[in-house]
Image 1 (tube, rainbow, N blue to C red):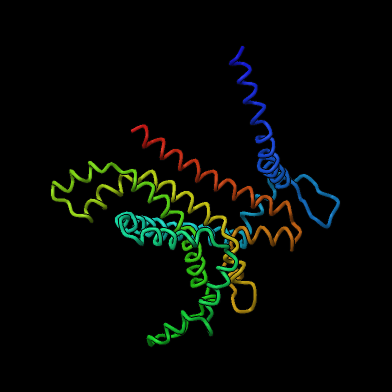
Image 2: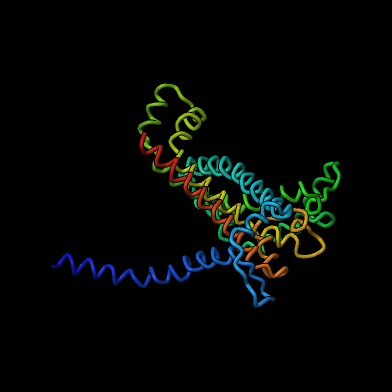
Length: 295
């Protein structure tokens, strides 16, 4: 009887939290799925059920395919930059733990992750400015030619990849630092006795032992990359930058279809595809970790 009372007390205690979570998280997902099956136009009272017609139209829409391709390139490009850099920086900070500046190193690396993205993106927009930006000033000072960073499609993608990597790097470093601090020191002491130097220990021991951390950081980075929006939107906020037009991303395309073209059902179908991508990446993460645990 006591255990039964404790059980129902626990259920009643967590029920409000589950209710709030369902209303804030689950209900919008279910509503988005419903909207994606309708021709939901904000300017029309008639909202007929169309089934999978929105999804069929999406995959024949060149603008959507370009947005999906660009978003995938940005996500995987940010992952390719973030993973090795965060691992190397975490290793450097970890081996400088006894330094009196170790706290400063950790704070300096982590600040970009917590700073507001919009003012930070505005600052980087000034840096990438073709005429007034210090980046082109440095390039011209070294004898090179000024580059149209925010007007060329390829360079715009590189700028957005850099911003996403800059934002997610601090979180990756923090997670890798936790991993480094939990590695078994006895293994590295044995490797040192066998004659392994620091680089060999890092490459052949730290990297394999940190594989679960790498899997987690890679999936988190990919999800952040697929949800990229503010970077492209801020850099395209006036005539000095146009990656929002040169490089369409999925979330920006969704918002334009919703609030400019008033095709809410069509945009909801895009959101469902984005959700499917995020769920697929999460399933891959759990699958790889489960496979490692089984071995």
